[in-house]
Image (tube, rainbow over all chains, first blue to last red):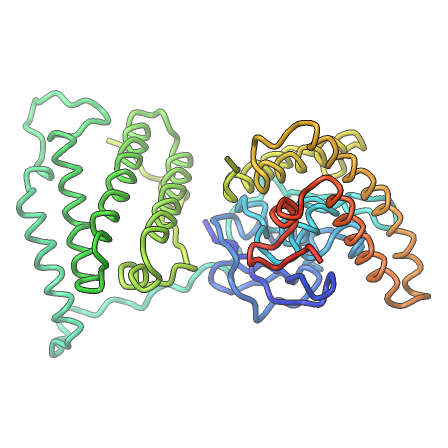
Length: 300
Length: 122
């Protein structure tokens, strides 16, 4: 599933107290101008959603059916319509509260000549080709030997400890004994062991990425957030495993938990700690589950 | 307690998800009321008193009647450049002033103010 990003820049609307908002897809391959420009803005918010549906809603003129500016709505309402697939809005843009009070979230339908139906393009799915990120470069062949660089050495230092954690918990990955009864949705080892394993991996990540940069108490706070996130994720995994959740529902729930996790970590860390840990600024968020991939999986 | 921004977005989207492209006038009125209630829950708190919510709704409807007239200024704007923008700004000022009769200055800032602290109270 693609990503829809709402961006903003200052404009002269409402006595120069408002931001213009427009929408892009996550990789910047396509933008929708929403009654203004579509470059030069700062990210306000983003969320997963079908870029094909967004493009359908936007219509060729990229105004999303907001026919008469300042009568049916302004850029905020046009952007909100295009953002519908991601279930986010332009909330937080300057002037939004006023435009929302005057025109509502998605603008007024109005009457001729300013009639602005909101066609939600329900049932339209998928992503525009220009919004799909290019494939990564082909991996280096094993026969191409290179001298280790400092980056290689750092990677190995990190990975060596990860491998040691895996080795210490090898029984979690052992094949079940033949003939042993297995219950769908259950682990072969006690749940506490599974939690401890994943937590130790994250603890290593915190230690490696933050090191002495971490303020006192930050690692403990992060581990607390992680344990709570993990409990919810494992619950979703169980529900998916026993058929209480469809693949699409699981992917959506996983993405929801991923975003919540990033938000909670962002709250518990300074900008520097966050960027050191995740190697990206707080303003950027990522999701990982592609429902189309999950859909094709079979649970044995 | 206030609705979080994310919850507000979720509920607003859900409000509109199954509406037809051109809702009936009554549907539009109900959606306007529901959106106002959600905005109050998000900006002023879920325990904001009922009678004051009704007062804000009355303001909302008065502003809506004026907003509809913007259509006439839209049609006049080719003859009088800038008139629509001036009328829209005047409407925004009317809305702020009318809300100020129901809300305290602090509440007005919370309700209409921007997240970056830009003041609406002059």
